[in-house]
Each structure stands twice: as C-alpha cells, then as structure tokens.
Length: 151
Image (cartoon, rainbow, N blue to C red; front, side, top):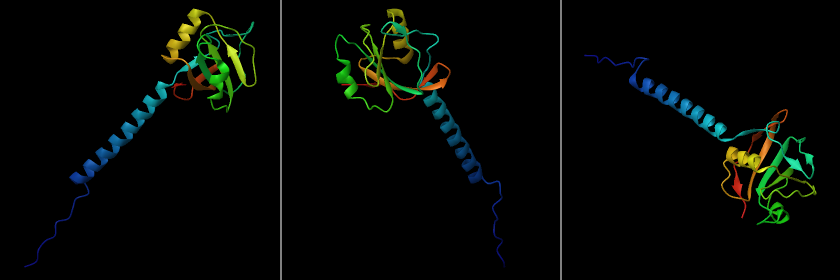
C-alpha cells in the first residue's frame, strides 16, 4: 500500500507567526527611531535673544558646540580644553558675564528669564554641560548630541 505524503499548505501556522514577528520588529524599530528623534530639541534663535559683549548674537555657522557653565565656579578656558573642537563653541555663562570672543569660542549670555527657558528646554540639570546643535532652517537649530556633563 502506498502512503500519501502530507503537503504543507502555503498558509501554515509557521508562516503566520513569521510574518507577525517581522511586522512586530519593523514596528518596534520605527517606534524606537521616533523616540530617539523626539528626545532631541529644536531651538530658534529668533525667539530667544542672546548677547555677546554689547551686540545681539546671531548664528552664522552650520554647527555649534554649546557649553553651559558658570564663570563663578569654572574658568571657560579650562573647560574648553576638555571639549573636542570640530566647530565653534557657544559658551553660555549662567553668571551672565560678557567676555570677548576668543579663538573659536563665542561667549554669550542673556537675562535670567531667557537663561531659565533655555535650561528648561534642554533639561540641563548640572553645569558645566556640553552638547552640539546643527542648523535646521534659517535661525532654527536642532540638538544633535546628548548633553554631557564635563568634569
């Protein structure tokens, strides 16, 4: 007597689980990408005014490294030595001293309310902190790296 071989139907349970698993992986990758993208903040220099010495500061470069520090506690020159200098540094002094521009460092500051808005926007909890921003459109910049605390 001849035995009949069972043939698998193209719609088997293993195909169903494999396609479900594949769809779940694509959805989780998409959700993770959106989460990572949303962590970084946008910042518009049109909305918040910073000063350098006695002039208004208007960004001109594509990228900046932001250094948030207090000149009361730390010397900016010592902190700047610890930062990788691929682009210009915007040194924001929370103590609100206005220093002159030196090398590739632009010292900027603003009023207390403006500085508080900036600190809240980027969730800065300790100083000195450093992160990078890149030009998005016009005077709008996007945070490009995580905020690191310098020691």
